[in-house]
View (cartoon, one colour):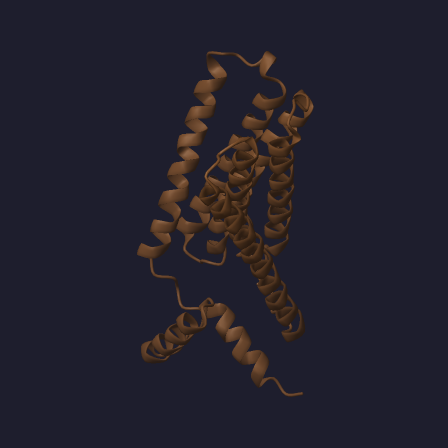
Length: 238
């Protein structure tokens, strides 16, 4: 794990605040619009579109926040890519809601692909928060689970675009098995990371010192390794 300079870390912190602020403001405006529609008394087609837009913004805002959780970490590029895909999926969804007509098979296939990718990116981003853990079980489980996520996403995308070539007997069974195993890994890996105590990042220190470092790392919301890096960076001359 490479050390981060203070300046990039500050920029990432600011970017994260901006993303959160934009999401909160957008969802607040959409929520106000939905409440106004519900209180207006008439639930016509326009009202349904406003409520649909509110639901879309809320759902994809959660996905963007999941991806943005990787900001400032080694895998932040993955998170930013996931956030971009989530925003694209939200735009396509809102376009579909307000279009008022059929937009063609290609559009809806693209929309379905974007939604599937959004779900995969957001869940994978949350799991990648465990990428710095040093337990072998967590690392192996995380790798297998992410590989299963990729397999499920690839199969879903194939089903969306080339459903006519799919074997109706084998393909659904294989997709179901891969999906179940991916969901199992998404639950088991975080549980294992909680049950197994991470090995101390600083060897040779007495247990009391390690406990103090762990407490400070928890207070700052960072890993023990990241805390040690920050302390060493701050103590470096010049």
